[in-house]
Image (cartoon, rainbow over all chains, first blue to last red; front, side, top):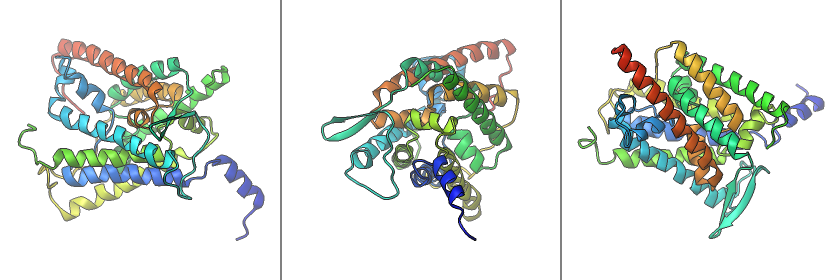
Length: 185
Length: 153
């Protein structure tokens, strides 16, 4: 087989940041999920935290049915936040480097106590309105990118495969329309 | 329910969450710009994260039940994540898709995003709680009306 330079060029344009940071990150997300599953038998998703945490402040039946799992879901979410901070303190700060990690150029970097932090340039209204729809949609649709996308697809669940196909397709269409309307960032 | 749990139950979940969040940071999924760039076909890396994680999980989900009957910290049987299909999967998936496409952020990535320093993501997290509360308020009411809410998920 002879590698076609035109084809290689096209592939490089589709992956301007390479694939290793994505593949390694995905591997770690999978390992975190597996560690919890091995110990507890729970295929953990991230979005139920939203409803289960509301059970602390609301008596509604829809939230109260998560009382049994709300404590560990807070612990899971706190871990995810801390994991993001651990990444910021190491690779994002340049303290640790690897040929597998591509820093990228998005957003704004700033520094607090020697740790390089990052913030988005996406407009707050997009984050808020999008967040409301994510909150409604993941709860009605029985899962998000981790529940359906990682655990459900990993379980070869037809429900989750259909769910992922639905939200991926709609998200691509939405992002294309938003960009075509000139909304940026 | 939580009182008789194994003392290592929460520590294990915490460590699992840290690895999970570190992976979301490393893969730049905690950066909404990178997700939007995927949805605009400018950088096709995202499927390597989601399907990479799904493959790793899938191997564990498939193999573990062959070696053990129950998880050591809970005594729960190893089961796959299978949920019943109904119209809600399509409706909810579509609503989530619009929100994800508009903002570039999903729940797990939003938590990790806060960790990498993205204070602005509090707008999205606030929105997610508002959305989750709105659907819970509505469904608790319609569920009480039907008087037959069979908890499915």
